[in-house]
Amino acid sequence: MTGVPPPRSFEPPPGSKVKPKKILSPIHHYLSRSRKPFWCAEQPLTRPPRIYVDQKSVFREVAAVTQLRRGDHCMITLNVLRCLSPWVDYLVSLMGSLELFHLYHHFVILDDVAFVDEFGVPRTEQDEIVSIMEYSNTVEGFIEEVRVKAFGAWCSLPRIVLQTLLHKAHCHKVPLADYGDMPHIFRMEEKLTELDRERIVRDAVNLIDNQISYNILWANCEHTTNLVSGKQQYTSPEVHFFIWSLVRYTLTVLGLATLHVVTLKCYSRYCLHFPLW
Image 1 (cartoon, rainbow, N blue to C red):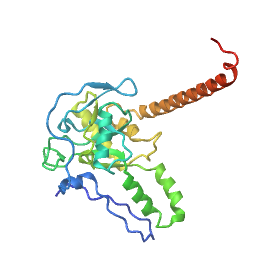
Image 2 (image 1 turned 120 degrees about the horizontal axis):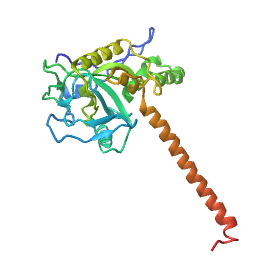
Image 3 (image 1 turned 90 degrees about the vertical axis):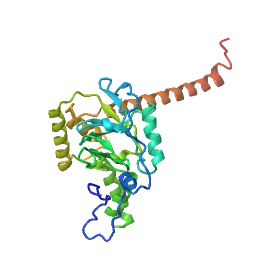
Image 4 (image 1 turned 120 degrees about the vertical axis):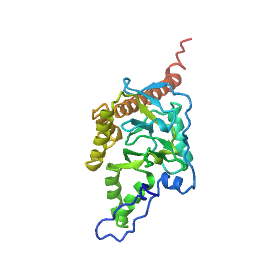
């Protein structure tokens, strides 16, 4: 079938005898009819708006994938276990829809979605597969990349794992259908003209050709998506939200532990001999 991306593989280093494996993505399973995505082209009720973690931006869960247009800044629930199991992917996606999880993966839509074909793959009016720009990787892809780069030698494994962890995601163009197991897609509410959308797609494609080296703290998917989207700011409010939440929960646990210790000390030593009642 035309327009279908080939299975992903990693080029082994020069001199390596390791044979790379081909990694299938969800779209290959859909097109082979081994399973179907969870989304549909129906038009249910419009979802209510939500406030993003920066307390300024507004986003909304799209009612149907056919509402997506090129240049849209979209998000799905952050899922580090993506592509391991369709049902795990769906459960994580549902948690985001129910507002039980507030960390998201960001990407840019590169084509207008006109319809969803019989395989469940979003397509354009020209019957081409709809694509997105994103920084991403999967557990299977990470393991295969480490295996290929390690030359099959266990002694070099720790170094390769560390290097791959620091640059574990790659900026690339992938089918939107790869997120068919995570049907709850969110879109930033932005007023974009046709010129804005053309500029966003152009900048996104340029970023694929001249990608910034990934780093989870200062060069993640949100940084790059905000850079090319309508916001045009190289920023990641989720990093600030995550760090603040981590500090807050750490202080909460320390406070509870301190209160527990003080209570035990008070009861066993002071209050037992000098009761206050």
